[in-house]
Image 1 (cartoon, rainbow, N blue to C red):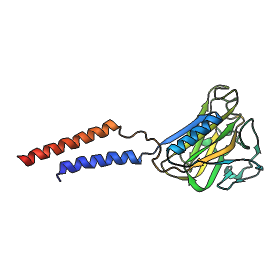
Image 2 (spheres, one colour):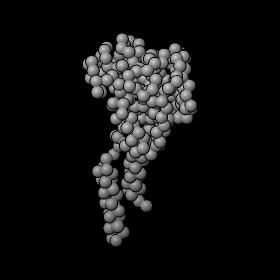
Image 3 (cartoon, rainbow, N blue to C red):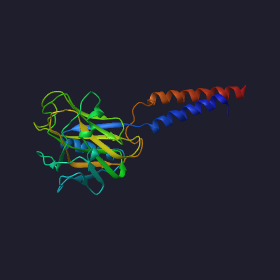
Length: 239
């Protein structure tokens, strides 16, 4: 095989690899019902199976131990559990505290889920948020990685659905699998609750719709280049 043909084939291979290995981060922010449906459909479309655990019969303490995960606060701070509005299960009070513009400065007021088996998709319900202290944002981090912003409120009520301060948030990261997930807000002064029904899944790496990879047209151009080289090679052989 000629060097030129080998180079083109290598280009096709690299383009295909980039397409297959691409990692995607997806977030969901919606009313509880529609957000839950969006989470489930995203998991199914990626070939995964969504698990769900509704927080019922949960007592306040330094940890909440479930079959598949444990909920704690940094430094084993006390977890105060309660109910909120029409959310589907109990919630944990994670009123934000911290200062400065770095989202990570507020993580100690949030909660951390530690899973027995690794996951890369998680969603849950949030209550009493966006009622004051704007701008106020919500963040999810997998295994202590970069904070993923899953929602922001800039004015009172702008994140309400059906006049209720109740939302469903979720994040997906198919770059790998993770054992811990942290969630927190930075709207100091507001109340914030998280819990309800916790939904989670493990998706195959690169199974979400990719972004930032060669478009089909780009791959087609590579294919055209390969065809041209092969045609030129045949002409030389005939001569």
